[in-house]
Length: 70
Image 1 (cartoon, rainbow, N blue to C red):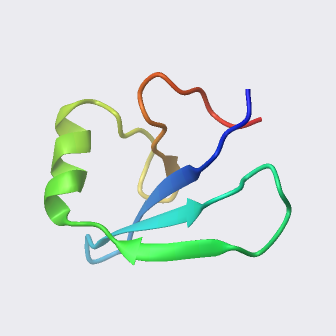
Image 2 (image 1 turned 135 degrees about the vertical axis):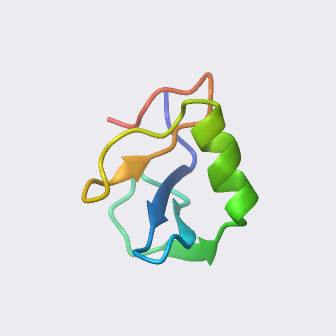
Image 3 (image 1 turned 180 degrees about the vertical axis):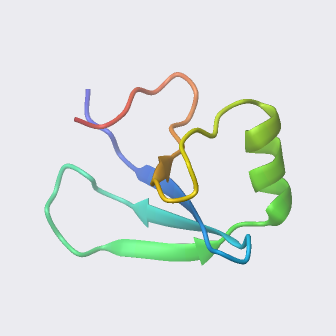
């Protein structure tokens, strides 16, 4: 199965959520896009138990039903 898009969630020290989107993770290129996510998204993911890791670790959010890219 090919992953068509991979999003990773990062939270800055001040609590601002950012999303890093790779539109073609199977292709080694530099087509990476960043955008701020609303704080409500971060709160919903936390309530749903989809966030893991510590403050110093990368937290990857994978859409339900799709496994992580390999």
